[in-house]
Amino acid sequence: MEKLTSFSSDGLTIEGLLERIPGDRGVVITHPHPLYGGDMLNPVVKAISNSYRDKGYSILRINFRGVGKSGGKYENGIGEQKDVLSALSYMNELGISRTDLAGYSFGTFVNIGAVKKRPSVQKMIMVSPPVAFMEFGRPSPVLCLKLVITGSLDEIAPEESVKKNLLQWNPEAVLEVIGGADHFYSGYLKKLEEIISLHI
Image (cartoon, rainbow, N blue to C red; front, side):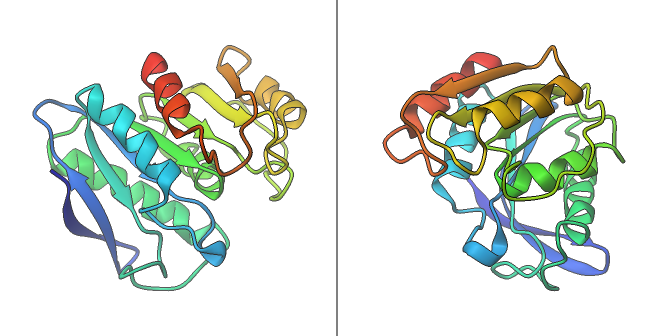
């Protein structure tokens, strides 16, 4: 059962949905772009959460600063990295010592910046990194990245562009392309859950 929770990040109160499951494994899940309505209740974020729940992980979905009841305002993905780092620390305080990081769209952009500052993340999963929409900068190694998923019709995370970035992030990571899916995965959420479950 998920419960509303909150933690401090950079002097701000950040809200989240926490489901604590016995054990030391957990995941922090981040959402799509706040300026386009993204939040922790997004259906793709929920699908990621379902996959991890089925595998017995504790789950923390967060609202970035300025979203929902989280304090502050949008900070171009930079301030949001602090929210991710604080979420990871919060999980650690709860006794969850092995934490994954998963994100969808804008959330992947934030996560990849955060994980470079916190290399202790067990593994990272990206769903539709928006490489055609946001400037990720020059790709550099992200060895904890294990899985990237996009749709064959995703114009924000086009397969070929994702492949090029993945070669620099981690060429050993798995790329899964869901045929027929666009950036929003309408009609493909169950398939998305299945793929994530296979790789957790």
